[in-house]
Image 1 (cartoon, rainbow, N blue to C red):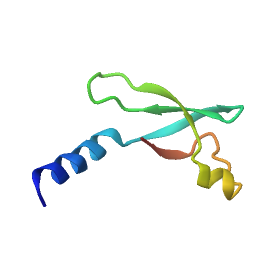
Image 2: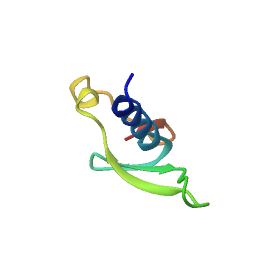
Image 3: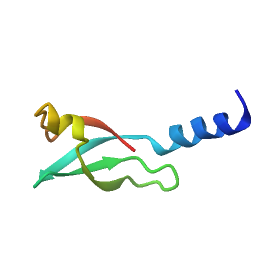
Image 4: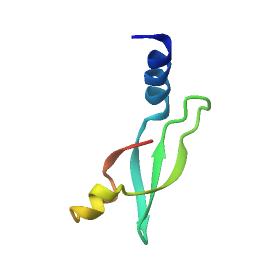
Length: 68
C-alpha cells in the first residue's frame, strides 16, 4: 500500500459518521451525529441512497444510520 492509498482510506474513515434519524419529511431525513471538532452534536439533512429506493426500504425515525 502506498501513501496515496493510505490517505484515501484515512479520509474515508474520517468522513463516515454514524447517527440517529430524528425525523423524516418528504424523502429527507434529519440525522443527529457526533461532531469530532465540537462538543455538541450536529444535525445533517440527508436522503436515502438509491439502493434503498430501488428495494423500497424506508428508513424510520430512531434508526441508527451511517452518513457520508
